[in-house]
Length: 191
Image 1 (cartoon, one colour):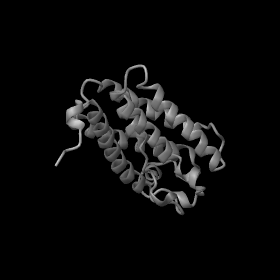
Image 2: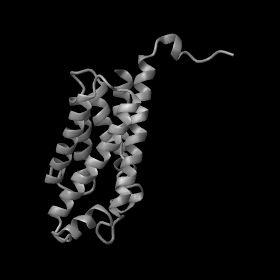
Image 3: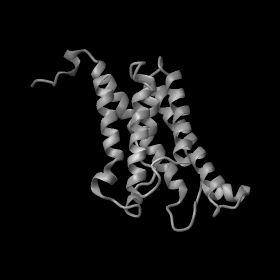
C-alpha cells in the first residue's frame, strides 16, 4: 500500500512539473499526452486496497487538473474536465474488474486498451466541440490524426499515451510486487 501511494504522489508531482517549473502552454508541448494518470487510474483501482482504490487516484486527477487549469489560465472546472473524468471513470471501472488478475499479461494489454479508449474519447470530444473541425467523417479523422494546424499532430498524443501507459503500468506493478515480496527477497544482495 505504501509503494502504491508513493507512486501516486510521484505521479501527481510529475504531472505538476509544468507548474513547479513555471512552464507556459507553448513550452509544455514537448511530449504531449505523456502522463501517468491513466495508468494510475487503472492500476490504482486494480491494486490499491478497496477503500482507497478509487478515491485516491481520482483525488490526484482532480486536484492536478484544477491546478494545471489555473496555471494555464483556464477555468478551474470545465466541461473538458468532465469528459476526462468520465473517461477516467471507465478506466477505473476496468481496473476494478481486474482486481484479481493484476499480472503483467493482463494489465499491460489493459494499459494499451485504456490509451486507445482515452485517445478516442478525448479527440472525439475535441472534434465535436471545436468549431475548427468540420462535423464530418473527414473532420473526425482529422481530429484523430493530424489535429489542428499550429498544434502537435494528435497521433503524437496517442503514441505518447501508449508509451506512458505501458511504462507507468509496468512501474506501478513492479513497485507493488516489490512491496509485496517477503523481506528476504527485497534485501540487497551481499557480496
